Amino acid sequence: MPEQRIGWAESPPRLRIGFGLAVLGAALLIAGPVVGLLRDSPAPGFSSMPLLVVLALLPPLVAAGFFAVRKPVVAAGVLVGSALIAPGRLLVDTQLLVDPLLVSRPELMVPTSLAPLAPAAGLWLLLAGHVLVGAAGLLAAGRAGAESATGYAAEFDDHSDDRSARARGTSLLVALIAGTTAAVGFLLSPFTSTDAYQLARNVVDNPGLLRYGTLALAVATAVAAVFGAGSARPSVARGVLLGATLAVAAVAVPQIVAGLAVDRLGSAPGPYLAVFGLTVLTAIVWLFGRLAPPAEQAEVSLESGRVHRVAGVLGVLTGVAALVAAFGAQLVVTDGLEQPVTYSNRLFIPAGLLVLALAVALLVPRAASSVRPAFTVALAAVPLAGASTLDAAFTATGVSAAVRIGAGVWFACAALVLAIAAAVAAALAGGAERDDVDLTERRANLALSGPLAAAALFAVGAFGLPAVKAPELVPPGIWSEFRLASWGLLIAVLVVLVATAIAPVSRPPRAAALLLGAAGLVAVRLLEYPLTAGRAEGAGPGPGMWLSLACVAALVVSALVAVGSRARR
Image 1 (tube, one colour):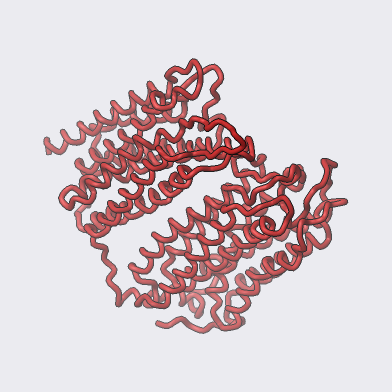
Image 2 (tube, rainbow, N blue to C red):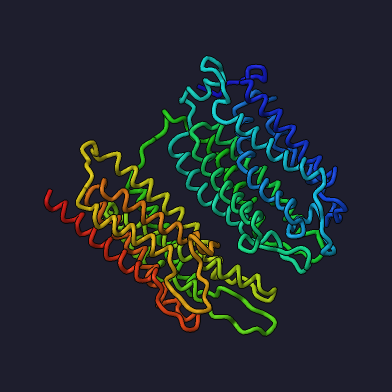
Protein backbone atom coordinates (compact mmCIF):
# COMPACT_ATOMS: atom_id res chain seq x y z
CA MET A 1 0.00 0.00 0.00
CA PRO A 2 1.50 3.40 -0.88
CA GLU A 3 2.28 5.78 1.92
CA GLN A 4 -0.87 7.51 3.15
CA ARG A 5 -1.29 11.27 3.33
CA ILE A 6 -2.23 12.17 6.88
CA GLY A 7 -3.07 15.73 7.86
CA TRP A 8 -2.12 17.60 11.02
CA ALA A 9 -5.55 17.08 12.58
CA GLU A 10 -5.33 13.31 11.96
CA SER A 11 -1.91 13.04 13.62
CA PRO A 12 -1.85 11.59 17.16
CA PRO A 13 -2.23 14.20 19.93
CA ARG A 14 0.99 12.98 21.52
CA LEU A 15 2.90 13.70 18.33
CA ARG A 16 1.45 17.19 18.08
CA ILE A 17 2.46 17.87 21.67
CA GLY A 18 5.92 16.54 20.90
CA PHE A 19 6.22 18.87 17.93
CA GLY A 20 5.20 21.79 20.15
CA LEU A 21 7.91 20.83 22.66
CA ALA A 22 10.45 20.61 19.82
CA VAL A 23 9.56 24.15 18.70
CA LEU A 24 9.77 25.42 22.28
CA GLY A 25 13.07 23.58 22.78
CA ALA A 26 14.53 25.20 19.65
CA ALA A 27 13.38 28.60 20.90
CA LEU A 28 15.15 28.02 24.23
CA LEU A 29 18.33 26.87 22.47
CA ILE A 30 18.32 30.24 20.70
CA ALA A 31 17.24 32.28 23.72
CA GLY A 32 20.02 30.91 25.91
CA PRO A 33 22.94 32.50 24.02
CA VAL A 34 20.89 35.63 23.35
CA VAL A 35 20.14 36.18 27.05
CA GLY A 36 23.69 35.23 28.00
CA LEU A 37 25.10 31.94 29.23
CA LEU A 38 27.68 33.42 31.60
CA ARG A 39 28.02 36.63 33.56
CA ASP A 40 30.51 39.02 31.97
CA SER A 41 31.02 36.41 29.29
CA PRO A 42 33.88 36.90 26.80
CA ALA A 43 32.84 37.50 23.20
CA PRO A 44 32.55 34.56 20.78
CA GLY A 45 35.31 33.99 18.26
CA PHE A 46 33.07 34.79 15.30
CA SER A 47 29.57 36.08 14.57
CA SER A 48 27.96 32.78 15.43
CA MET A 49 24.41 33.79 16.35
CA PRO A 50 22.89 33.47 12.83
CA LEU A 51 24.47 30.03 12.48
CA LEU A 52 23.23 28.89 15.90
CA VAL A 53 19.72 30.12 15.11
CA VAL A 54 19.60 28.19 11.83
CA LEU A 55 21.00 24.98 13.37
CA ALA A 56 18.54 25.12 16.28
CA LEU A 57 15.52 25.73 14.04
CA LEU A 58 16.31 23.18 11.34
CA PRO A 59 14.86 20.03 13.04
CA PRO A 60 11.43 21.55 13.89
CA LEU A 61 11.30 23.39 10.54
CA VAL A 62 12.04 20.19 8.62
CA ALA A 63 9.45 18.34 10.72
CA ALA A 64 6.94 21.12 10.00
CA GLY A 65 7.65 20.70 6.30
CA PHE A 66 6.76 17.02 6.45
CA PHE A 67 3.62 17.84 8.39
CA ALA A 68 2.74 20.32 5.64
CA VAL A 69 3.08 17.64 2.93
CA ARG A 70 1.00 15.26 5.10
CA LYS A 71 3.80 12.87 6.06
CA PRO A 72 3.71 12.95 9.87
CA VAL A 73 5.57 9.64 10.28
CA VAL A 74 8.64 11.16 8.66
CA ALA A 75 8.19 14.27 10.82
CA ALA A 76 8.06 12.08 13.93
CA GLY A 77 11.26 10.35 12.83
CA VAL A 78 12.99 13.73 12.54
CA LEU A 79 12.01 14.53 16.14
CA VAL A 80 13.21 11.11 17.35
CA GLY A 81 16.54 11.35 15.52
CA SER A 82 17.20 14.80 16.92
CA ALA A 83 16.26 13.64 20.43
CA LEU A 84 18.79 10.78 20.34
CA ILE A 85 21.63 13.30 20.24
CA ALA A 86 20.12 15.60 22.91
CA PRO A 87 21.45 13.80 26.06
CA GLY A 88 25.04 14.09 24.87
CA ARG A 89 24.58 17.77 24.05
CA LEU A 90 23.03 18.30 27.49
CA LEU A 91 26.03 16.75 29.26
CA VAL A 92 28.50 18.75 27.18
CA ASP A 93 26.73 22.03 27.93
CA THR A 94 26.38 21.17 31.62
CA GLN A 95 30.15 21.56 31.89
CA LEU A 96 29.48 25.32 31.64
CA LEU A 97 27.88 25.06 35.08
CA VAL A 98 30.91 23.35 36.60
CA ASP A 99 33.89 25.17 35.06
CA PRO A 100 33.32 27.25 31.90
CA LEU A 101 37.04 27.80 31.38
CA LEU A 102 37.49 24.11 30.57
CA VAL A 103 34.97 24.35 27.73
CA SER A 104 36.36 25.05 24.27
CA ARG A 105 33.33 26.55 22.53
CA PRO A 106 34.51 29.39 20.27
CA GLU A 107 30.97 29.89 18.94
CA LEU A 108 29.91 30.84 22.48
CA MET A 109 33.00 32.51 23.96
CA VAL A 110 36.77 32.84 23.65
CA PRO A 111 38.29 33.60 27.09
CA THR A 112 41.23 35.97 27.28
CA SER A 113 42.08 35.41 30.95
CA LEU A 114 41.65 32.93 33.78
CA ALA A 115 39.12 35.12 35.57
CA PRO A 116 36.31 32.88 36.93
CA LEU A 117 33.01 32.87 35.07
CA ALA A 118 29.62 32.34 36.72
CA PRO A 119 26.50 30.86 35.07
CA ALA A 120 23.77 33.26 33.96
CA ALA A 121 20.05 32.77 33.27
CA GLY A 122 20.66 31.94 29.62
CA LEU A 123 22.51 28.77 30.52
CA TRP A 124 19.44 27.37 32.25
CA LEU A 125 17.39 28.18 29.16
CA LEU A 126 19.91 26.34 26.99
CA LEU A 127 19.86 23.23 29.19
CA ALA A 128 16.05 23.30 29.32
CA GLY A 129 16.02 23.44 25.53
CA HIS A 130 17.98 20.17 25.32
CA VAL A 131 15.57 18.55 27.79
CA LEU A 132 12.55 19.61 25.72
CA VAL A 133 14.12 18.33 22.50
CA GLY A 134 14.66 14.96 24.18
CA ALA A 135 11.10 14.93 25.54
CA ALA A 136 9.74 15.73 22.07
CA GLY A 137 11.47 12.65 20.70
CA LEU A 138 10.07 10.45 23.45
CA LEU A 139 6.53 11.61 22.67
CA ALA A 140 7.02 11.06 18.93
CA ALA A 141 8.59 7.60 19.25
CA GLY A 142 6.84 4.52 17.89
CA ARG A 143 3.16 4.99 17.12
CA ALA A 144 3.08 8.14 19.27
CA GLY A 145 0.00 6.81 21.05
CA ALA A 146 -2.04 6.51 17.84
CA GLU A 147 -5.17 4.36 18.12
CA SER A 148 -5.28 1.22 16.00
CA ALA A 149 -8.12 2.39 13.75
CA THR A 150 -6.37 5.58 12.62
CA GLY A 151 -4.43 6.17 9.43
CA TYR A 152 -1.28 6.93 11.42
CA ALA A 153 -1.37 3.49 13.07
CA ALA A 154 -2.04 1.90 9.67
CA GLU A 155 1.39 3.17 8.58
CA PHE A 156 2.89 0.68 11.05
CA ASP A 157 0.38 -2.14 10.64
CA ASP A 158 0.56 -2.48 6.85
CA HIS A 159 3.83 -4.07 5.74
CA SER A 160 3.32 -4.00 1.99
CA ASP A 161 5.50 -0.91 1.67
CA ASP A 162 8.27 -2.13 3.99
CA ARG A 163 11.83 -1.75 2.79
CA SER A 164 13.21 -4.84 1.10
CA ALA A 165 15.67 -7.09 2.90
CA ARG A 166 18.32 -6.14 0.37
CA ALA A 167 17.83 -2.41 0.97
CA ARG A 168 17.86 -2.85 4.76
CA GLY A 169 20.92 -5.10 4.69
CA THR A 170 22.84 -2.74 2.43
CA SER A 171 21.96 0.36 4.41
CA LEU A 172 22.66 -1.41 7.72
CA LEU A 173 26.14 -2.34 6.55
CA VAL A 174 26.74 1.24 5.43
CA ALA A 175 25.29 2.45 8.75
CA LEU A 176 27.85 0.54 10.77
CA ILE A 177 30.69 2.04 8.76
CA ALA A 178 29.23 5.55 8.55
CA GLY A 179 28.01 5.56 12.15
CA THR A 180 31.38 4.41 13.44
CA THR A 181 33.11 7.04 11.31
CA ALA A 182 30.85 9.75 12.72
CA ALA A 183 31.32 8.47 16.28
CA VAL A 184 35.11 8.47 15.91
CA GLY A 185 34.84 12.03 14.62
CA PHE A 186 33.32 13.12 17.92
CA LEU A 187 36.10 11.39 19.86
CA LEU A 188 38.81 13.38 18.08
CA SER A 189 39.77 17.00 18.72
CA PRO A 190 37.26 19.50 17.28
CA PHE A 191 40.04 21.72 15.93
CA THR A 192 43.71 22.47 16.41
CA SER A 193 44.72 25.32 18.70
CA THR A 194 47.68 27.48 19.66
CA ASP A 195 45.49 29.50 22.04
CA ALA A 196 46.21 28.75 25.71
CA TYR A 197 42.58 29.56 26.60
CA GLN A 198 41.01 27.39 23.89
CA LEU A 199 42.39 23.89 24.31
CA ALA A 200 41.79 21.43 21.49
CA ARG A 201 41.14 18.33 23.58
CA ASN A 202 40.08 14.88 22.42
CA VAL A 203 37.80 12.66 24.46
CA VAL A 204 40.67 11.29 26.57
CA ASP A 205 41.88 14.73 27.66
CA ASN A 206 38.45 16.22 28.34
CA PRO A 207 37.36 16.71 31.98
CA GLY A 208 34.55 14.63 33.50
CA LEU A 209 31.27 15.95 32.11
CA LEU A 210 32.81 16.86 28.77
CA ARG A 211 34.31 13.39 28.45
CA TYR A 212 31.08 11.60 29.26
CA GLY A 213 29.07 14.00 27.11
CA THR A 214 31.39 13.42 24.17
CA LEU A 215 31.17 9.66 24.66
CA ALA A 216 27.38 9.96 24.82
CA LEU A 217 27.40 11.92 21.55
CA ALA A 218 29.54 9.25 19.88
CA VAL A 219 27.42 6.36 21.11
CA ALA A 220 24.13 8.11 20.29
CA THR A 221 25.35 8.90 16.77
CA ALA A 222 26.23 5.25 16.11
CA VAL A 223 22.93 4.07 17.65
CA ALA A 224 20.91 6.54 15.57
CA ALA A 225 22.68 5.38 12.42
CA VAL A 226 21.98 1.69 13.05
CA PHE A 227 18.45 2.27 14.36
CA GLY A 228 17.45 4.42 11.41
CA ALA A 229 19.09 2.27 8.74
CA GLY A 230 17.66 -0.94 10.20
CA SER A 231 14.05 0.22 10.34
CA ALA A 232 11.63 -1.63 8.08
CA ARG A 233 9.44 1.43 7.57
CA PRO A 234 10.86 3.79 4.90
CA SER A 235 9.29 6.82 6.60
CA VAL A 236 10.86 6.01 9.96
CA ALA A 237 14.28 5.26 8.47
CA ARG A 238 14.37 8.51 6.50
CA GLY A 239 13.07 10.67 9.34
CA VAL A 240 15.30 9.31 12.09
CA LEU A 241 18.47 9.60 10.02
CA LEU A 242 17.57 13.07 8.80
CA GLY A 243 16.86 14.28 12.35
CA ALA A 244 20.07 12.73 13.70
CA THR A 245 22.09 14.30 10.88
CA LEU A 246 20.67 17.74 11.65
CA ALA A 247 21.44 17.32 15.36
CA VAL A 248 24.99 16.14 14.64
CA ALA A 249 25.46 19.14 12.35
CA ALA A 250 24.37 21.43 15.20
CA VAL A 251 27.36 20.16 17.18
CA ALA A 252 29.97 19.75 14.45
CA VAL A 253 29.33 22.67 12.07
CA PRO A 254 30.23 25.37 14.65
CA GLN A 255 33.46 23.46 15.30
CA ILE A 256 34.23 23.45 11.58
CA VAL A 257 33.53 27.16 11.26
CA ALA A 258 35.63 27.91 14.34
CA GLY A 259 38.58 26.04 12.88
CA LEU A 260 38.30 28.09 9.71
CA ALA A 261 37.45 31.52 11.11
CA VAL A 262 38.90 31.96 14.61
CA ASP A 263 42.45 33.21 15.14
CA ARG A 264 44.95 30.67 16.47
CA LEU A 265 42.56 27.81 15.67
CA GLY A 266 42.82 25.40 12.76
CA SER A 267 40.72 22.72 11.14
CA ALA A 268 40.82 19.14 12.40
CA PRO A 269 39.25 16.04 10.82
CA GLY A 270 36.94 15.19 13.76
CA PRO A 271 33.85 17.33 13.00
CA TYR A 272 34.19 16.70 9.26
CA LEU A 273 34.03 12.94 9.89
CA ALA A 274 30.97 13.36 12.12
CA VAL A 275 29.00 15.34 9.54
CA PHE A 276 30.22 13.38 6.52
CA GLY A 277 29.42 9.95 8.00
CA LEU A 278 25.76 10.62 8.77
CA THR A 279 25.16 12.77 5.69
CA VAL A 280 26.32 9.99 3.36
CA LEU A 281 24.25 7.40 5.23
CA THR A 282 21.12 9.56 5.10
CA ALA A 283 21.53 10.13 1.37
CA ILE A 284 21.97 6.40 0.73
CA VAL A 285 18.90 5.43 2.79
CA TRP A 286 16.73 7.97 0.99
CA LEU A 287 18.03 6.73 -2.37
CA PHE A 288 17.54 3.05 -1.55
CA GLY A 289 14.12 3.81 -0.12
CA ARG A 290 13.08 5.20 -3.48
CA LEU A 291 14.74 2.61 -5.70
CA ALA A 292 14.17 -0.61 -3.76
CA PRO A 293 11.04 -2.68 -4.55
CA PRO A 294 8.49 -3.44 -1.80
CA ALA A 295 9.32 -6.29 0.52
CA GLU A 296 6.77 -8.65 -1.01
CA GLN A 297 8.30 -8.19 -4.48
CA ALA A 298 11.94 -8.40 -3.38
CA GLU A 299 14.17 -11.35 -2.77
CA VAL A 300 14.20 -11.57 1.01
CA SER A 301 16.47 -14.55 1.51
CA LEU A 302 20.17 -14.21 2.08
CA GLU A 303 22.58 -16.57 0.41
CA SER A 304 24.96 -17.56 3.20
CA GLY A 305 27.80 -18.39 0.79
CA ARG A 306 27.76 -14.94 -0.73
CA VAL A 307 27.66 -13.23 2.67
CA HIS A 308 30.52 -15.46 3.83
CA ARG A 309 32.57 -14.17 0.92
CA VAL A 310 31.73 -10.57 1.83
CA ALA A 311 32.74 -11.21 5.44
CA GLY A 312 35.94 -12.90 4.28
CA VAL A 313 36.93 -10.00 2.03
CA LEU A 314 36.21 -7.52 4.81
CA GLY A 315 38.23 -9.69 7.17
CA VAL A 316 41.21 -9.74 4.81
CA LEU A 317 41.06 -5.95 4.54
CA THR A 318 40.80 -5.73 8.35
CA GLY A 319 43.86 -7.93 8.82
CA VAL A 320 45.90 -6.00 6.27
CA ALA A 321 44.92 -2.65 7.83
CA ALA A 322 45.84 -4.00 11.28
CA LEU A 323 49.29 -5.12 10.11
CA VAL A 324 49.92 -1.77 8.44
CA ALA A 325 48.88 -0.10 11.70
CA ALA A 326 51.34 -2.34 13.55
CA PHE A 327 54.33 -1.38 11.41
CA GLY A 328 53.31 2.13 10.32
CA ALA A 329 54.44 5.31 12.03
CA GLN A 330 52.13 6.14 14.92
CA LEU A 331 53.55 9.58 15.63
CA VAL A 332 55.29 12.27 13.59
CA VAL A 333 57.54 14.67 15.48
CA THR A 334 58.96 18.03 14.42
CA ASP A 335 61.18 20.72 15.94
CA GLY A 336 64.12 18.32 16.04
CA LEU A 337 62.54 16.02 18.63
CA GLU A 338 63.62 12.38 18.75
CA GLN A 339 61.19 9.91 17.20
CA PRO A 340 59.50 8.05 20.10
CA VAL A 341 59.32 4.27 20.24
CA THR A 342 55.72 3.02 20.28
CA TYR A 343 54.61 -0.20 21.90
CA SER A 344 50.82 -0.28 22.08
CA ASN A 345 50.42 -0.79 18.32
CA ARG A 346 52.46 -4.01 18.49
CA LEU A 347 49.34 -5.88 19.60
CA PHE A 348 48.11 -5.35 16.06
CA ILE A 349 50.64 -7.97 14.90
CA PRO A 350 48.97 -11.01 16.53
CA ALA A 351 45.51 -9.45 16.09
CA GLY A 352 46.06 -8.83 12.37
CA LEU A 353 47.57 -12.28 11.74
CA LEU A 354 44.72 -13.99 13.61
CA VAL A 355 41.98 -12.14 11.72
CA LEU A 356 43.77 -12.50 8.39
CA ALA A 357 44.23 -16.28 8.78
CA LEU A 358 40.59 -16.85 9.70
CA ALA A 359 39.38 -14.49 6.93
CA VAL A 360 41.31 -16.44 4.30
CA ALA A 361 39.77 -19.68 5.61
CA LEU A 362 36.36 -18.01 5.45
CA LEU A 363 36.83 -17.52 1.70
CA VAL A 364 37.08 -21.32 1.24
CA PRO A 365 33.46 -22.46 0.64
CA ARG A 366 33.82 -25.83 2.40
CA ALA A 367 35.39 -24.33 5.50
CA ALA A 368 33.40 -21.09 5.71
CA SER A 369 30.57 -22.32 7.93
CA SER A 370 32.94 -24.00 10.37
CA VAL A 371 35.33 -21.04 10.59
CA ARG A 372 32.73 -18.28 10.84
CA PRO A 373 32.11 -18.47 14.64
CA ALA A 374 35.85 -18.30 15.37
CA PHE A 375 36.26 -15.43 12.92
CA THR A 376 33.41 -13.43 14.48
CA VAL A 377 34.83 -13.72 18.00
CA ALA A 378 38.43 -13.11 16.93
CA LEU A 379 37.47 -9.76 15.40
CA ALA A 380 37.32 -8.37 18.95
CA ALA A 381 41.13 -8.49 18.95
CA VAL A 382 41.10 -5.46 16.63
CA PRO A 383 39.39 -3.06 19.09
CA LEU A 384 41.55 -4.56 21.86
CA ALA A 385 44.68 -3.45 19.99
CA GLY A 386 43.08 -0.39 18.40
CA ALA A 387 41.83 1.24 21.59
CA SER A 388 45.25 0.89 23.18
CA THR A 389 46.93 2.35 20.09
CA LEU A 390 44.58 5.33 19.89
CA ASP A 391 44.91 5.97 23.62
CA ALA A 392 48.70 6.14 23.39
CA ALA A 393 48.63 8.26 20.23
CA PHE A 394 46.14 10.81 21.55
CA THR A 395 47.99 11.05 24.85
CA ALA A 396 51.28 11.74 23.03
CA THR A 397 49.78 14.40 20.76
CA GLY A 398 48.36 16.17 23.80
CA VAL A 399 51.81 16.59 25.31
CA SER A 400 53.26 18.86 22.62
CA ALA A 401 52.14 20.59 19.43
CA ALA A 402 55.31 19.20 17.83
CA VAL A 403 53.88 15.66 18.01
CA ARG A 404 51.28 14.71 15.39
CA ILE A 405 49.37 11.58 14.52
CA GLY A 406 51.07 9.38 11.94
CA ALA A 407 49.69 7.17 9.17
CA GLY A 408 49.63 4.12 11.45
CA VAL A 409 46.89 5.67 13.57
CA TRP A 410 44.67 6.22 10.53
CA PHE A 411 45.14 2.57 9.52
CA ALA A 412 44.21 1.63 13.09
CA CYS A 413 40.96 3.58 12.67
CA ALA A 414 40.37 1.89 9.31
CA ALA A 415 40.92 -1.53 10.89
CA LEU A 416 38.33 -0.74 13.57
CA VAL A 417 35.72 0.31 10.99
CA LEU A 418 36.41 -2.72 8.78
CA ALA A 419 36.25 -5.05 11.79
CA ILE A 420 32.77 -3.79 12.64
CA ALA A 421 31.62 -4.26 9.05
CA ALA A 422 33.11 -7.76 8.95
CA ALA A 423 31.39 -8.68 12.22
CA VAL A 424 28.03 -7.59 10.85
CA ALA A 425 28.54 -9.55 7.63
CA ALA A 426 29.55 -12.64 9.62
CA ALA A 427 26.47 -12.27 11.83
CA LEU A 428 24.23 -12.01 8.76
CA ALA A 429 25.87 -15.14 7.32
CA GLY A 430 25.23 -16.97 10.58
CA GLY A 431 21.59 -15.93 10.56
CA ALA A 432 21.16 -17.12 6.98
CA GLU A 433 22.80 -20.42 7.83
CA ARG A 434 20.57 -21.01 10.88
CA ASP A 435 17.47 -20.47 8.77
CA ASP A 436 18.23 -23.77 7.03
CA VAL A 437 18.91 -25.81 10.19
CA ASP A 438 16.37 -27.53 12.44
CA LEU A 439 17.18 -26.32 15.95
CA THR A 440 13.98 -27.40 17.68
CA GLU A 441 15.64 -30.24 19.61
CA ARG A 442 18.76 -28.36 20.66
CA ARG A 443 19.78 -29.10 24.28
CA ALA A 444 22.42 -27.52 26.46
CA ASN A 445 25.71 -29.42 26.66
CA LEU A 446 26.15 -29.73 30.41
CA ALA A 447 29.60 -31.29 30.00
CA LEU A 448 30.88 -27.83 29.07
CA SER A 449 29.66 -26.13 32.24
CA GLY A 450 32.78 -26.85 34.33
CA PRO A 451 35.56 -25.73 31.95
CA LEU A 452 33.48 -22.82 30.67
CA ALA A 453 32.82 -21.52 34.18
CA ALA A 454 36.57 -21.59 34.79
CA ALA A 455 37.24 -19.88 31.45
CA ALA A 456 34.74 -17.10 32.22
CA LEU A 457 36.27 -16.49 35.64
CA PHE A 458 39.80 -16.43 34.20
CA ALA A 459 38.66 -14.06 31.43
CA VAL A 460 37.44 -11.46 33.92
CA GLY A 461 40.84 -11.45 35.58
CA ALA A 462 42.76 -11.67 32.30
CA PHE A 463 41.30 -8.42 30.98
CA GLY A 464 40.53 -6.75 34.29
CA LEU A 465 44.01 -7.07 35.79
CA PRO A 466 47.24 -5.69 34.26
CA ALA A 467 49.23 -7.97 31.98
CA VAL A 468 52.40 -5.93 32.55
CA LYS A 469 53.48 -4.49 35.89
CA ALA A 470 56.28 -2.05 36.56
CA PRO A 471 57.10 0.47 39.33
CA GLU A 472 56.40 3.53 37.12
CA LEU A 473 53.64 2.04 34.95
CA VAL A 474 49.95 2.83 35.44
CA PRO A 475 48.16 0.55 32.95
CA PRO A 476 44.54 1.07 31.87
CA GLY A 477 41.92 -1.03 33.61
CA ILE A 478 38.23 -1.77 33.66
CA TRP A 479 37.51 -1.02 37.33
CA SER A 480 40.15 1.67 37.81
CA GLU A 481 42.20 3.93 35.52
CA PHE A 482 39.41 3.71 32.96
CA ARG A 483 40.40 5.49 29.75
CA LEU A 484 40.20 4.98 26.00
CA ALA A 485 42.28 1.78 26.07
CA SER A 486 39.89 0.37 28.66
CA TRP A 487 37.14 0.17 26.04
CA GLY A 488 39.15 -2.43 24.14
CA LEU A 489 39.56 -4.48 27.31
CA LEU A 490 35.85 -4.18 28.08
CA ILE A 491 34.79 -5.23 24.58
CA ALA A 492 37.15 -8.21 24.62
CA VAL A 493 36.02 -9.56 27.99
CA LEU A 494 32.36 -9.14 27.04
CA VAL A 495 32.91 -11.06 23.80
CA VAL A 496 34.61 -13.90 25.66
CA LEU A 497 31.83 -14.03 28.25
CA VAL A 498 29.16 -14.09 25.55
CA ALA A 499 31.01 -16.89 23.75
CA THR A 500 31.16 -18.98 26.94
CA ALA A 501 27.46 -18.33 27.54
CA ILE A 502 26.18 -19.44 24.13
CA ALA A 503 28.64 -22.27 23.47
CA PRO A 504 26.69 -24.86 25.56
CA VAL A 505 23.53 -24.36 23.46
CA SER A 506 25.37 -24.25 20.12
CA ARG A 507 25.89 -27.18 17.79
CA PRO A 508 29.13 -28.96 18.84
CA PRO A 509 31.23 -27.99 15.77
CA ARG A 510 30.12 -24.37 16.02
CA ALA A 511 30.70 -24.36 19.79
CA ALA A 512 34.26 -25.66 19.29
CA ALA A 513 34.97 -22.99 16.67
CA LEU A 514 33.46 -20.31 18.89
CA LEU A 515 35.65 -21.29 21.83
CA LEU A 516 38.80 -21.56 19.73
CA GLY A 517 38.15 -18.07 18.39
CA ALA A 518 37.79 -16.84 21.97
CA ALA A 519 41.07 -18.61 22.83
CA GLY A 520 42.75 -16.73 19.97
CA LEU A 521 41.36 -13.45 21.30
CA VAL A 522 42.69 -14.12 24.81
CA ALA A 523 46.02 -15.18 23.30
CA VAL A 524 46.40 -11.67 21.88
CA ARG A 525 46.05 -10.34 25.42
CA LEU A 526 48.56 -12.97 26.59
CA LEU A 527 51.14 -11.62 24.12
CA GLU A 528 50.90 -8.09 25.54
CA TYR A 529 53.72 -8.74 28.00
CA PRO A 530 56.35 -10.09 25.57
CA LEU A 531 55.43 -7.47 22.94
CA THR A 532 55.19 -4.35 25.12
CA ALA A 533 57.29 -5.01 28.25
CA GLY A 534 59.98 -2.66 26.93
CA ARG A 535 57.77 0.38 27.53
CA ALA A 536 58.61 0.50 31.24
CA GLU A 537 61.81 -0.10 33.19
CA GLY A 538 61.73 -3.09 35.49
CA ALA A 539 58.61 -4.52 33.81
CA GLY A 540 57.45 -8.00 34.69
CA PRO A 541 54.47 -10.20 33.92
CA GLY A 542 51.32 -9.09 35.69
CA PRO A 543 48.46 -11.23 36.98
CA GLY A 544 46.52 -10.54 33.78
CA MET A 545 49.12 -12.45 31.75
CA TRP A 546 48.97 -15.56 33.94
CA LEU A 547 45.17 -15.50 33.99
CA SER A 548 45.19 -15.10 30.20
CA LEU A 549 47.29 -18.26 29.95
CA ALA A 550 44.85 -20.10 32.22
CA CYS A 551 41.88 -18.79 30.23
CA VAL A 552 43.37 -19.95 26.92
CA ALA A 553 43.90 -23.42 28.39
CA ALA A 554 40.33 -23.57 29.75
CA LEU A 555 38.87 -22.48 26.39
CA VAL A 556 40.90 -25.04 24.46
CA VAL A 557 39.80 -27.78 26.87
CA SER A 558 36.19 -26.65 26.44
CA ALA A 559 36.55 -26.84 22.67
CA LEU A 560 37.92 -30.39 22.93
CA VAL A 561 34.99 -31.36 25.18
CA ALA A 562 32.57 -29.94 22.60
CA VAL A 563 34.20 -31.97 19.82
CA GLY A 564 34.15 -35.08 22.01
CA SER A 565 30.48 -34.66 22.76
CA ARG A 566 29.76 -34.62 19.02
CA ALA A 567 31.67 -37.87 18.59
CA ARG A 568 29.66 -39.51 21.39
CA ARG A 569 26.42 -38.39 19.76
